[in-house]
Length: 434
Image (tube, rainbow, N blue to C red; front, side, top):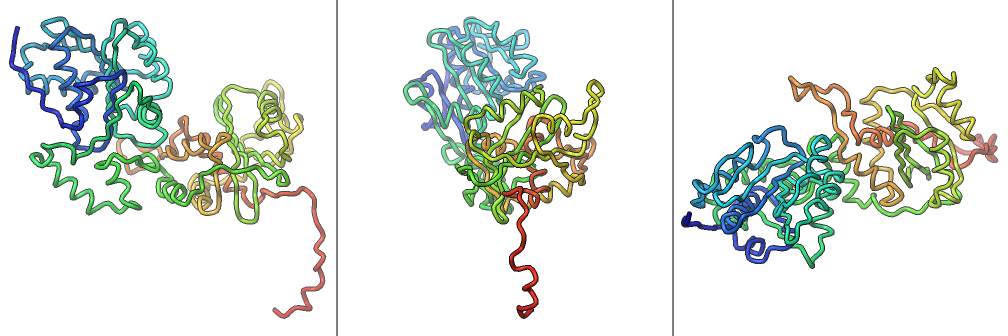
């Protein structure tokens, strides 16, 4: 069935059609036609020869969450509306080309492994993809000549897909093309220019980082709505997230957060008013003796002088099996412990907010994982009122963030010596004028 087909895409994106590679990544801001372009390229390729196309995203509860509607719209505009038809939750072409739509989250990722013979895999909104999804999916798409098409507006510079497909792309088998609204020849035929102007004029974020993210495809300092968004932006701009050497003469203190099956620890040193976070650790389903062994056997911490281990107030609870508190267990393992004062959520968040001005975080030794948490630390909001906070979101990023806030709470207790020195000037104060 021959039809007249047109392929109108921005000139900048032509390489993904004329010279496709194993990985074809289009990233950038709103109004750039990234998704529109890939929908057209895949539809034309599927018209020219039978192909099996997997359209994947991290979360998909129904076809409404997928690119199904976008594909149907573009196929109609290209003159392929009658060639492609909806079919069993997907799209089927007259020549057997098939578009399949899948979610890649934990509950679905095992099913992806069973897919065979995929020619093209389109990862839409790829900035939301997890490390686990990518680790499972990428080696699954292994048919000779198979390709990935990746579209995203990167949210953070450590988004797994941004790191893999943009920052660390292999130039030998990848196209990496940044596309923004000014690469779209049809942009000014839409209503978007008015929205762009409004966002530019009303953006009060430092350096207009929200505008730059939405329209220029730049990464954000933290996820939208993050508790510490402004502080993280300032922190990174001042270069406070950088490699830090451990001072062998100073004590290293551990500040912990405890959760169900998860323990996290900030490793910090204090010098005058400056807190240096030299590392971060997170353990899942590990006992305190295992945790202790890992710390003591860690070559990166081989020469440190250990100070105190600060633990939250609930560490005083006794284990019904042993009758011992968490404090007692750690003390029996040779640690000196101290309780973190119990304060309200807003108090420890405010102290954490202030500590950004006087601390540094190591960019290695786990400090990068701590920054990943701080960029994503959010409030939990009521389902019926997004302006009503109901505490902090308890997720993969809250453990590190709360350990950071606890560090701010005990910052004045982080000493560099366990000895008490006498004051040689004691009694001489009266000899000096007030």
